[in-house]
Length: 206
Image (cartoon, rainbow, N blue to C red):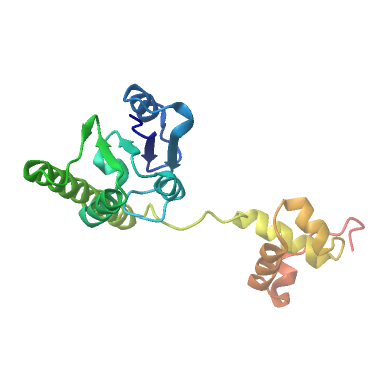
């Protein structure tokens, strides 16, 4: 009797995280390496994930979709429930860490809902901690925006070179390794009225 394909889905929230542990676990659960779909640097609170979209589209009646944990599939109870119901309608089994989810089993539904609520709570907790950390950093003056491309001394030097008339905007861009917009902003901050303070000394002594 043909039982269909076994497909796997793995996800990590940041690009720096490694998918190896999940993919190894999926293969240990019977998923062939070429049928593992992944999303890297994608939060589980987003439903529009390329890897998730692809694996759901690849599933056919009789297939089994495997995830190591429910929170890899979704970080909200609503999304997890919607995906599970969609799979059930399409006659696709959902395997969570080796256990087949049975929507007709009251205990199975209860466990599924508990896992979904835990995943959603953890996502909310992460967001709250992130907001709190940013607020603390801001209060301590550690969030100050992007670092200026030119130090004050470099900016004064650039303006002085321009006022001396020996360098074009293009040459200043190349010399300081910055964009034209940065050059123009620097010049705007130092109007011609103060050019005398910034001018470079003439080599002929005049």
